[in-house]
Length: 105
Length: 137
Image 1 (cartoon, rainbow over the protein chains, first blue to last red):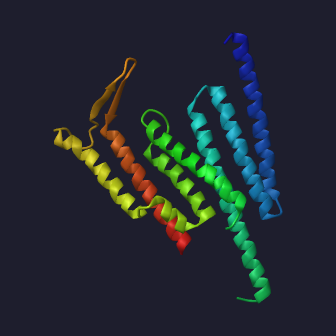
Image 2 (cartoon, helix red, strand yellow):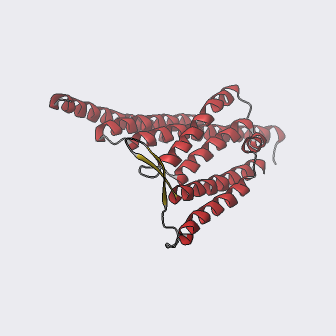
Image 3 (cartoon, chains in turn red, yellow):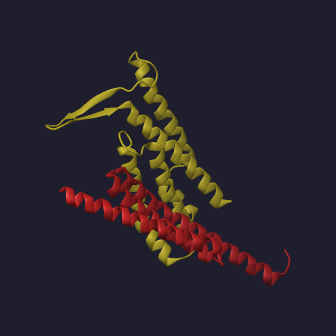
């Protein structure tokens, strides 16, 4: 790789990291204000996808291969987090519906 | 939870997660990973399977009681430590055997690997016990 190419790569990955940070910030705002729990779950899922992208860019930027392992592990585990939260929300909705139809108790 | 999308996605993902967990176990010696994190990733896969298919099918899939996995792991870790004692060295000293001499490098196998497999079995057994107990209650 020539000096020109490595300089270009450095600049591009820096820009990618900055934009991904901004995207995570916007998703975080949605996580805080999201009126519905479902909005918050989607925001959390979006943040985890962005973190995977961030880890990939960071791996290129630092030249550290270990970040790719972290990105794979995080991508696999984030799915479980979203599924578990969605199931929790489903149970909560079912419970409140039962409370409405059967009154107290 | 009966969701066709989740069950189909889980069938694909669980195998991937388990393969990655084995990769973490083997690569743990000289890069990030190891028995503990590998077992955590494997437990994540089984947790996903529990959510999609229910605890009964997880018990069928792993075949043995997770508590036996803990006992097996502890025994393996202890045995890998005691192997050094029988060789006349301090407890838990790493012993290495050369498995194969290849042209470019030599393949060695040591007691630290068996210790790591023991840690893997202990952590996986503990987390599976907790997950299955929580789901079945």
